[in-house]
Length: 98
Image (cartoon, rainbow, N blue to C red; front, side, top):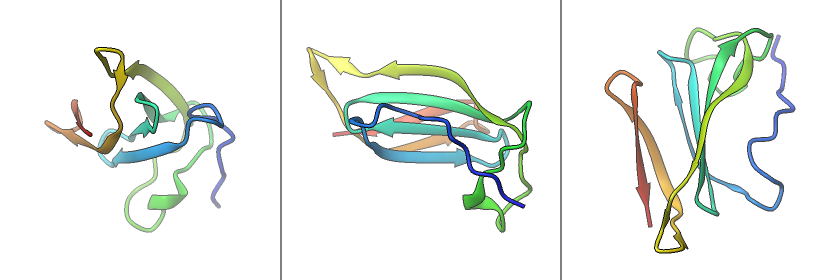
């Protein structure tokens, strides 16, 4: 059985640009087109299961718990992340921006 989350990652007017899921840490990082970034833990206190990875890996049951949010803002210009990646066993995040 798969349950869908009703958690809103960003505002409706701030669409998702890139995301990456770490199977080992059960974490999801999401970036928006307006330069916002958020890291979520997918395996805490609940019944949420990430449907996208149902067949690929063991599931991490739990709700989406926001660990941190940030905005990349250099010289008042927002940068759009085209790709986000976990590295160092999911302990660090690399964000590629335009």
